Image 1 (cartoon, rainbow, N blue to C red):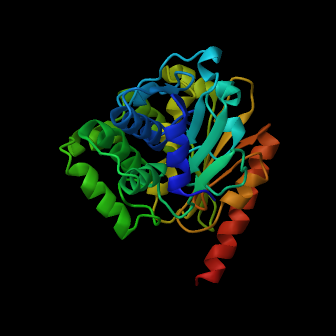
Image 2 (image 1 turned 90 degrees about the vertical axis):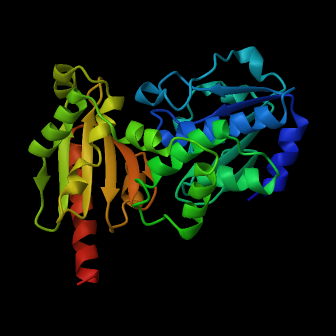
Length: 318
């Protein structure tokens, strides 16, 4: 793994820097991308810094808007991806046209695709890594820089609830809050849902099935989304819903795509599920991962595997 100094030296070398994040972004993806971009622009005003994506930020546009990038922008450019574990998830495939590629991430490094990388799976958010980088390399963290970074940390820690949250995470959050950002506004923006999104959460609960071992699943079909006027990305609002049930230890939320396949969301309060996701064209964190299923038969297979892992987890912890 490369060092922060190595990454900083590359930033110094390039007049054009283009930052990418993953598709169907969450606050950590947009926040880490925007926070690093703003910090570079403030320290090096002569550099051209762009945030690239497929304009799929949706309800998260309050964190940052994407720039319009062209293939010609990548000529002799440094490209940096943040919060993106593998190449299929990089938003905007023009990233391949850059001169040099750096990966900054906190997911397990199952796809070491970059020329240089800094990956820390113990960090609860890519935004925390970005703050550590900025501090070590002497960047000034202004209010404008802090806003997206704080949003990303709040989002990926589940408002400081998830187990990867550490004492250092709180120190980083305090530093960002000290810049004068409106932390109440950020928390509200992350937590608020529309009335139709709330209806989808209720539908996810209504359709949920729970196995006696403590594994649960719910399936959201395209018809469900269309009736509520919601997009596939907005279905993410229901991913955490089964976890509100006290006796549920691990769960799947399956969202049908327009082509009839399914996006698979894995979440857990203890059982390790990222190895299961890897079997189905996916991956992620030990307690939060994503994958794909080609049909209902694979959906059933996915959930059967979650049931087995949950059963073993309970046996090991009794």
